[in-house]
Amino acid sequence: MKKKILFTLALCVITLVILTASNRIPQYSSSSRPLTIDIAATVKPPAPVITFPLPTDNFSSTDQNLAIEGSGYPLGTVYIQENGITICQTQASMGTIPDGGSFSCIPPVPYSLGAHTFDVFIRYAGAESDHTPVIG
Image 1 (cartoon, rainbow, N blue to C red):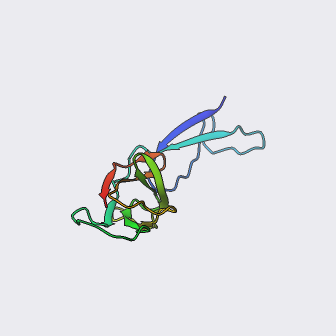
Image 2: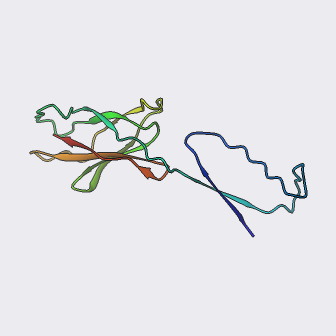
Image 3: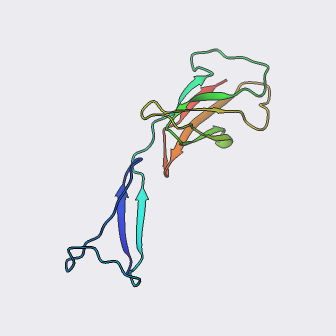
């Protein structure tokens, strides 16, 4: 019979010692049974903050390879989508919580000419942030 223990955590270290009712001191032997530990994130990361282009900018450019830049949950995976399709993916740098790590993402395929609306969000440990719209 496998024991299953569910922990909820965010960036912490776990030391686990299991004591049975008959043993006050942990017993270790080669015939020990495997223990499965599932770690689940129940707290979604905060939405990313876009620093370029700013939402208040009436932004126009002929550069078809502009980066979308911002900050987000440290080491979270940043997704930039247009019309529900991921056009760029990167990882936020190791920063501090709640300030977050920085990111910059240039899609591998140049933008087509014209107006674009992007959704930017972060996934970390299976949880997804709210989406931040970017209009450029």
